[in-house]
Image (cartoon, rainbow, N blue to C red; front, side):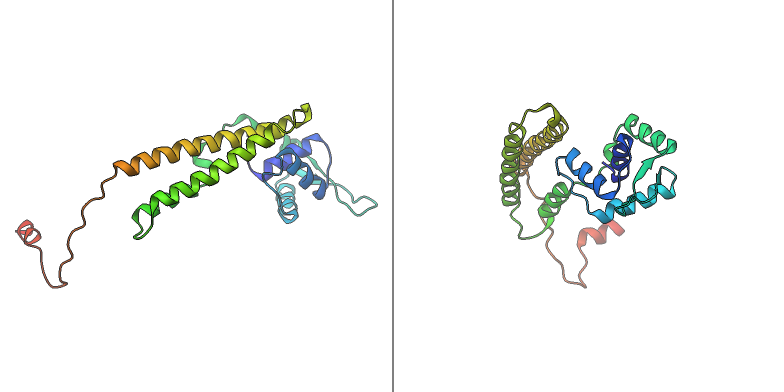
Length: 193
């Protein structure tokens, strides 16, 4: 989720200032994505520069509220109507980690898989516990975020099972014996002729 569109969605509810936006964002996402207040104000400045929000006069308490513009509403509507592409998501650090573990000497890849599986299972249990801790209607946004986290953790466990099975079947290619720097392999010499 982009912070930009998250703030636009919150401003669609009504005028808010930075700290209100940060609190509402964290409440809406169940604090799964904590925001630094600097991120909020930097994003608001860009949104204002792009004409998607406008700042209003400061309150007596010195707080500057923002409101969404018509251009901001159009941008938000387009965001909601556009599916998220897998290519738009960040690189998956776990898959990169396992790929590198396979090619790094001295790394026990099975141990890496098991360590990750244990951590993912603990997270899955915690997400499930949190999901059933409350069933109030106003908690639906948070429960939906938890459901997504549960499904992602379950998919990760399935993928780790697949990785483990693949490791059992994996036969590394035999390495070629090293040759002396000046020596030329006969096969290479014959291939050049």
